[in-house]
Image 1: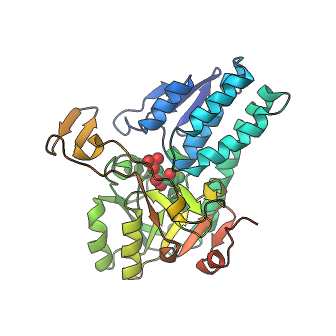
Image 2: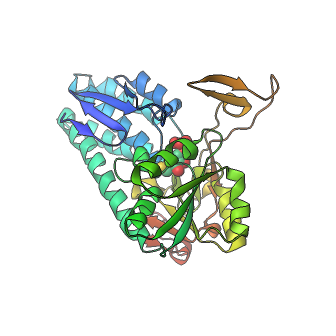
Image 3: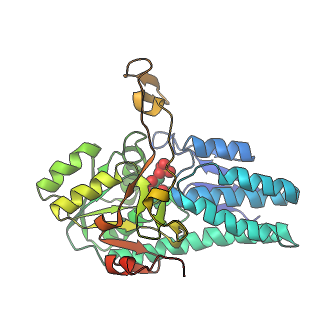
Length: 340
Ligand code: MRU
C-alpha cells in the first residue's frame, strides 16, 4: 500500500502505526498496529478513538493483512473481531460492511486496499463538507462550547464539530471555545485543548460541571458536539455528558448542534433506545491511571456505573450538521433519516 499520513494514522512500508491518544499531549508516540489483537487492544484502551478513526484504522489493517497474504477466511474472521472492538460508534460497522463487500470480490486483495484508501479519502472530504456546512451557523464573535474530542485526531480530515470550529476561527468568527474536560477520560482536557492550541484557536478549559453556570451567565452562544451514532429518528449517541449539555442548552435557549459524517448515520436503528452503549471499567471512575502512575480515590470495592456514551433525544437538537448540509428538526421529524 502507498504511504499514508493523517493526524493520528500512518502507513509506512506497509505497516500501520497509530498516534497514542492516551499519551497525548505530553508525548507524541507512534505505536505499531500490525495484528488484529494489537489494534483491538489500542481501540479498547482508547489509544485509537473517535467514531470515524476506529472504522478507518480497522479498514486499513484489514487491507494490509490481505496484502501480506492472509487468507480470505482468516480476513473474514479478522473483520468480525474488529467489528466487535467497540459497540457504540456505527462508523466501524459501516466501514467494515464496505470492506466485507470488497473481501467478496475475486481480486479481494486489490479491492480491500482500494476500499480502505477510498474510505480515508472520503472521510477527509466528509470532514470538509461538515466544516463548510457548519461554519454558516457560526456568528461572528461566538463563544462556543464543545465536549470530548472531534478533531483531526478522531478522523482522517479536519474533524467534525472541531472542524467547524477551526473553520469558523479561520474566518475570524470565534471569540472563545469553552472546552469541557470530558470526564472520565479527559478527551477534552487532553486532546481538544491540544488540538485547539496547535490551531491557534482561543480556548478555556472547564470541568464538565461548569457549563451550567456559564450558560446561566450568557457566556455560551452555541454548543457543538460530534456523534457516535445517529438513529433514524435523529436521537444521537455521543460521549457521556453530551445529554446533560443538551438539556442545559435547551433550558438556556442556546443552540445545540451535532456535527457528523454520513458514516455515523444508522438508518436501521429506529431510535436512541436501540443504540448499544458501551460500559467501561470501574477503574476509570474510582481513580485515575496514566503515565504518572495510578491513583485511586474511591473506597476499595466501590460500586461503579460507567457508560462511555449517552443518548441525546432529537427534541433537544437544533441541527444535524452533515457533510451534505444542515438537517433541520422539521426534516428529521419528517423522516429524512429513515431508511427508504
Ligand atoms: O470514547 P471516544 O473518545 O471514542 O468517544 C468519542 C466521541 O464521543 C466523539 O464525540 C465522537 O466519536 C465523534 S469523533 C468525530
